[in-house]
Length: 171
Image (cartoon, rainbow, N blue to C red; front, side, top):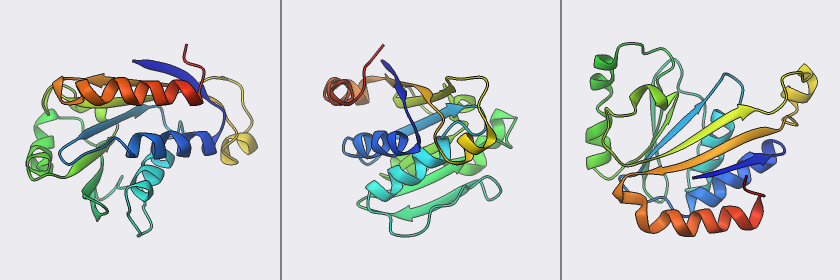
């Protein structure tokens, strides 16, 4: 597990680019954090880094958006799903089995329901008092925790954590 501070939206995008190099077909990425902490900024940059040419928008109301990059990748937002049984209709397990990478915003709600292997990236506000202008400009600092879970990431976790440590000071 790595925990560090990203200085701004550009740092969040750099983190996404770094992680994208290590993602493979069938990987699950869970994004956690309060509203406005950087989940969608991260997801957009991750998908772009994986070769998605389309404009990536938040799937909050459609729940799932599918893209083709170097591998098929699905961007899912389960903010509006409260009952774990409702996750079945999204067929996330099938997407993973079919070799799609899956990125889920608000994914902490799905932990334990989609298998033991996933990367969880959690964004937290560093400063409780920040101006709206700073927030909108993407200048707000965030704590980020990157946690690798399950056997699927055993080999890649060490390499990725070492790369993260060369860019950010890990706490």
